[in-house]
Length: 412
Ligand SMILES: Nc1ncnc2c1ncn2[C@@H]1O[C@H](COP(=O)(O)OP(=O)(O)OP(=O)(O)O)[C@@H](O)[C@H]1O
Ligand SMILES: [Mg+2]
Image (cartoon, rainbow, N blue to C red; front, top):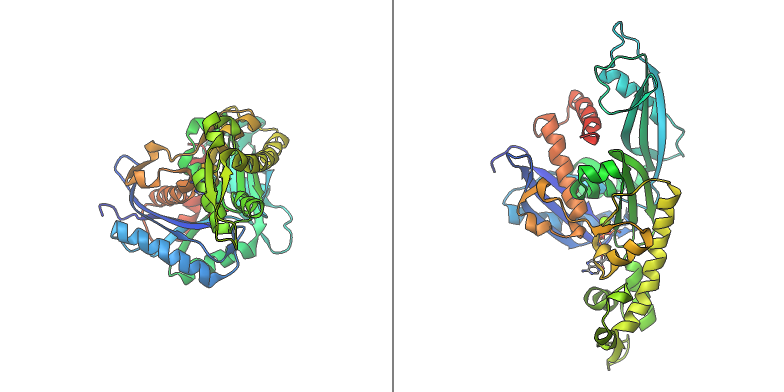
């Protein structure tokens, strides 16, 4: 290893656990050293239901990644998921009191604190506070207020809240697997970190992470997060539809979805529509035939329903997404998902592959939208450690530095 910094992303999902280990390269990219994954057990809709089962899955994914990279890890940056997140845009105002009336980091923190001073439901916490912009004496759109002059500082902040127990139980499960949690990061924020460009964030873009049981969406604009939404559905819905509709087992439903599934009938040529696949209904010894057209007829209406739900939420947020929609998560891999989403969102839509300018080393091992979250978590970890000036325990001073570093990062 050439650097003291080790960046580890651990994506604990409902169906898969993924681990990415990397180190910074001289050109500022994250050199991927190793990756590992395992089947996930003990979660429902992103929430831990059995800590022991989750920690076992984590151990497997981590030991795979350690074996590939040849390094041992003791901590990770972990994704935070769940159906109960709520994002809100808040503002806070403070007076700037110094003799020169020059804005300090302390003023910024006070303004952000004031924006985040909101009543929370019992047992809920703020899990993300992302500054959007600052307004100094009525002048808006300011991203770097430190050192500017003014007497009234206003902070606009996107605040996300969630039940505290979800985070606490996830942290416990990771600790049980022998790792410390450096930081938890919302899943769509991590996916955005690896897959969006600065232009996507600036001109307006929605990242939609289609997981197994949870789908999350974050809308970016003017360089910052404008809206967050989480939906209690994912690609498992297709598997269950196939299991019920075709009377096959869940594993077979999953296999049919992966190998032959399609959610956009206009992609099927006339010959392909007639093509038959063999399926084996539960409790039967003999197989039966199913045409690809019928398979698509089962899956497409569900895809339209789920995507329309997401699209309505994006419309309600009244946010500009002229940069389009970026789809991440394993659920986006179903054939036709991007094409049908493009029609429903009425905006350019692409799969979110990790940005080549951010990653090096074994980057080809994370070339798929299902790796966006784990890769984004590792990238977040690397950028944080570089700002802090190295690995190790966070001192209170470092935490403050990180806090302001985060603000600056949002406006990179
Ligand atoms: N090649 C593929 N074709 C179709 N579907 C796929 C493919 N690969 C993965 N999936 C589906 O993607 C889903 C898993 O996606 P992902 O790994 O992003 O979810 P997760 O992170 O484990 O779950 P969640 O985010 O909901 O907690 C599964 O339902 C799986 O069947
Ligand atoms: Mg996931």
